[in-house]
Amino acid sequence: MLDAPDPTRLFFLGPRNAPVEELSIVPVDFAHLFSLIPHVGRNAAVLYVAIRAMRQRAGVTSFAINDLAWMLRARPIRIRLWMQRLAREGLLVYHMTNGSFSDVLLLEVAARPDAGRTHDLPTHWVPHVLPRLNRTRFLVYLWVRSHEWGGHTAEVREERLARELALHPVRARFHLWRLRHAGLVVWSRKRREFTVRDPAPLSIPQQAALRLRELRVIPWVAFQVVLAIAMGVALTLFILHLRQ
Image (tube, rainbow, N blue to C red; front, side, top):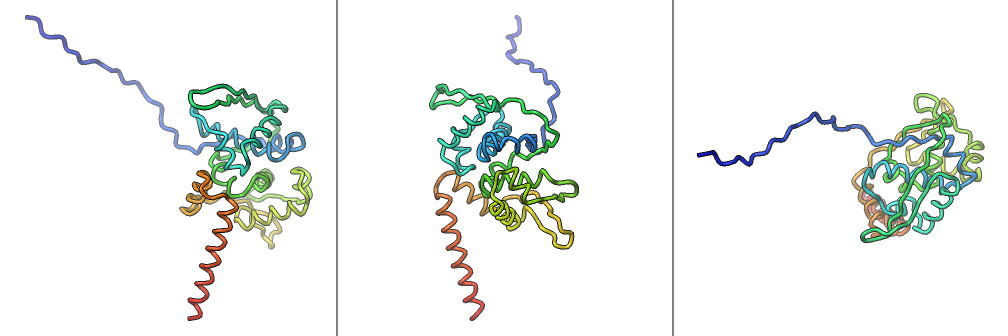
């Protein structure tokens, strides 16, 4: 009597690639980026960086217009207008089509010229740092980083900053002051130079604040007002406690 057939199947294992354990980065040519400002404006230039970074983070998946809107503090209609400016410059090609449950925006990013000032930008700066600064201040931060010449030391000339980013000198000085207040740019009176710092990892309250903004639970302006009131109340209670 013949043995019953054995249904066991054989699978042959092959070598697998080692898992990637590096940060996700996107190369940004700062010279090319800042040269776009006279043609597309500051907002569209920041959107260009954000789209490329989010494309790198998404991989084969997708992301929504609203994912960009909350990071850039802009309405979706403004995102589309800035995309149109990038398209006119040949930086993007996009096409609206129908998806299974919603409209789909098919995007293609054109190859960029190499102007010789390419930096590897961590893609997590877009969802973590950009929303906490704002579009213009984030662009100022990238401009300062583009002028590093060694040891995180940057040569910053306010008149050149204002000219290249199409900013009023007072606004340029204000954004530099806010970056110093945030700890991203440090001014040394002794050496008379700026030092650029990488953004610190997000704390738990910062993670929660960004998540609330992403979910649009609390508008950003209202959140700032509530936070300021809470800090004022906490400071008042602390002072009263010290006086007791």
